[in-house]
Image 1 (cartoon, rainbow, N blue to C red):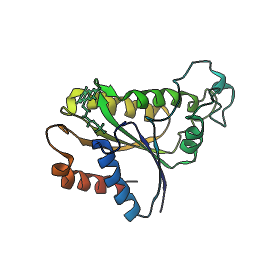
Image 2: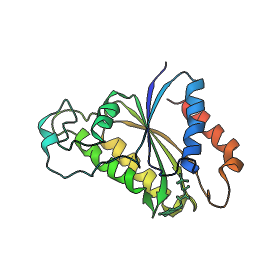
Image 3: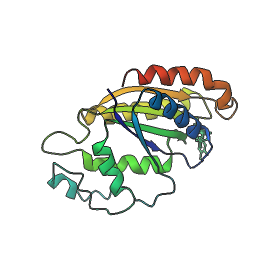
Length: 186
Ligand SMILES: Cc1cc2nc3c(=O)[nH]c(=O)nc-3n(C[C@H](O)[C@H](O)[C@H](O)COP(=O)(O)O)c2cc1C
């Protein structure tokens, strides 16, 4: 059944490694007749969570008190079936804009009733200059924990490693196969 997939892109580079991986994912998703929308986070103007907890007074909506470029994205997350977190690995973690975005997910976890992620699926797409253990594994673990906390399902990871030494084109076949395999699980 066609699903609504939301891709959050944490890379600042328009034609970088993460952008390549996303474009190959997009091709696979469109072949499978899913609908896809994407937000490129880096150019947007938004802040991290200020921990005012206003969001905890409303269990039905994000209800984040911050009004910025991330406000409509929260609504898009709630409307999506599947959320793709796509990020380069920066300093053994998510890129800065992705890390800020993940902080804003806090408003989707509710004190009363299910999280607004409940029943959704998550996918991780990561690109790194190093190997899987130069930070990517920490992001995958964090994303799995976040997913579980939100009563959602972590479907899988597609990881492009050694991207700075081994161009993405050289890895295209393996990555395309991994993406195709992942999309069959959505
Ligand atoms: C600020 C910065 C920090 C980085 N830190 C790491 C790191 O901790 N581990 C790693 O494997 N690669 C690291 N890299 C390499 C990037 O993850 C890699 O080049 C990535 O594919 C870039 O993605 P992009 O082309 O989509 O921007 C870093 C790159 C930058 C610019």
